[in-house]
Length: 412
Image (cartoon, rainbow, N blue to C red; front, top):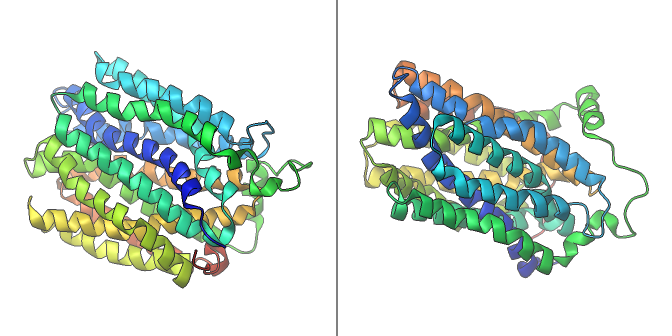
């Protein structure tokens, strides 16, 4: 069984566009918000920025699990996922293009809500395309390739930010938003396998897959709590990662005196390492087991985060961020296949939705809490708080069942 690189590259284009848009969003939108809020609420500005920045996660919390489960029961000649991609991604691209044209706090928030809503419509179906067309033994390596493409998208966004922010922000948003307009049609034309997922080998299933609430109820009633330990562990780790991405530009500009462009350049170090280590991370997960790989990388990540507040701008900070990117690669490429495997090709969209339900919940809760702690203890507490939360997540990953993380895979 071998990995089909061309097909996997096409899947990765969706991640390239999504990750690139989010990367630029997380660098610049907090600074847009800060510009409106700092003069009025100087002592609570970090709390408020962190709170506004979770609007996208709130939209994802309600939309993505539902849309993912709905796509399991969608029957069209384009397959179960592509209709959602063809509608949601281009509309998200249009909202993204207009973000730097805001004229007030109200118009900025309205554009953010529109962008978040349309991203919520297509993200779960886009992600579920990978297990739809990739056999189970190859999903970690395939996810490594896809996350490499996502990392490239983030790196391109940070590079665009370094070139065009803060003076030419409209150009930066036009470049990254244009990808969201184009990629869906590339998938439609060239990814023919998406129209017949693995679970449809003998045609679309006659019986509908269980809904989201039925599946969640089964997990809660089950005597085996280990799959929930996996999901809650990912909740904590994703929350700390999301807070780092959203609040680092604030830390860098306020604590270290860096510009937003310099902050974007610093984050490029993490994105570059994520690119380089994405495929090796999938191969290591295939050989050693996804669960063990994630927990070990998470433990090392805690140590790096504890050291980061001691570092000044320059090579030491860049090396720390590079280490964060390396360790994150080993976590992220193995996390989604671990959860998707529970769907057994029948409920791929449902478990994709659960994956986002838990990781999004962590992303919602963490930024405002860490923002408030930064207001109380200083911007450097960003790393300390993220380290403590990651540590709790790692402990839960160690308690999760091997079958929840799936057995080691064969190499492609």
